Length: 556
Image (cartoon, rainbow, N blue to C red):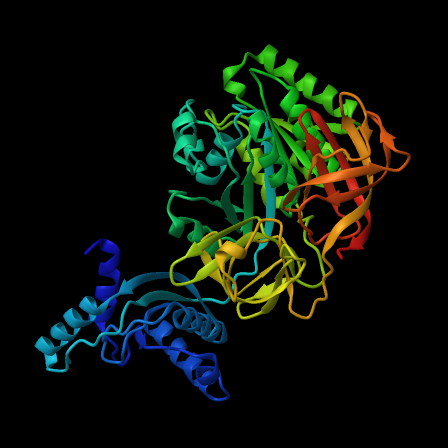
């Protein structure tokens, strides 16, 4: 058996005993274990186990009272974990980590034989099929309610975005060859080529102003530790700098509920065409932005100064005021950063120059992207987890979501919304009972297959009455186009996490480069949830533009 299975073996071997920290639960159900009186009793039991374990208890789910490996079907196991999470919340605790194993008939027979050898209690194995057994670490302390900002990175390929983020979240200096950026690459071809090809995520935090960093970002438990210990979190959405993946970069900057943008410009290269494109997307979304001039160690002082001047000219050309942090200080940057004032500082992941200033900046910057009102979240990714089911991940756009909430998911291709339930919630691999606006989370959903969950869909409260939208009105500005935009022009529209081909019908029949005007826009293939005031980006080849939704037409 591998080391992971040994965790289960140790928990079962420890057994339930008076004054111990291990508790066996064959199954937990909402109807029975959350009923009046039973809930309080079980929460008190959980609290006792946590205190007996000096702040941590171990719950083994899917085993009998005598430690027999019963196993649960996926739905029953998910419900049991949901109930355990609610009991933990009642007891001022939380589930820190959970591991699961598949249990088959052979496992049950071997377990029965083992127990028979020990105390004569074993029985012949029954033909029950495969089930799930889980071990949950329950730790003292209620759900974290930390301060949390989300930062989206942008910049030309090889300008040091991922390396800078890797050094920030680990506190390690880079080796000059991108060693710290390796923590953010996921796909094998990304690691091999040294080029990011999809969005990646990282987190670090602060406790009383002191950085809480990851020892090894590749370990899920290390990310969860940062989330648990920090009273201030900084999450990074690291985008892609290579031109062929501009669509992915736009998705990261437009589709996430970001608080700030971090644009990187290499001191040995200077602003490029891609730099200007990424800056345009950041400014089009009215996102407060910081510019980090990276790789200061790789350029002479004269070249670094020259690039600083180029960056300042670039910002002034688009109506923004640069603010040099080296000259004016972090205090001024925190006070002045906004849609029109852009702090600029010089950094090096190799010498770590400038990283202390970024730490101080991120520790003090106020949250900007949170929204009040009912819960809403646009789905950015979906995946299947054994024993849990379909998981939808994204950034909570507004309001709060709790485990057990009844939600709507959609619109589906036909415009309908499906009733689902939030089974459980994770934030950077840390299981939480609720999440509020601005959190990057994964929500396990009951009532839908993973194959039916698509990027661009939205999650909303069950009582909402959402309207699917196939066509909407917008105020648009054409940033770049080789000729003119006529009726029927079909770029890709990036709105929240949706990326869909859409036909444009400009008011007046056409739009020229640099023009701003009204247009009717119709999604080509399916409806989405579109609301007045939402901003979007559209592009097709070298043609690019931005817009704001001014009116919607319900889908027929």
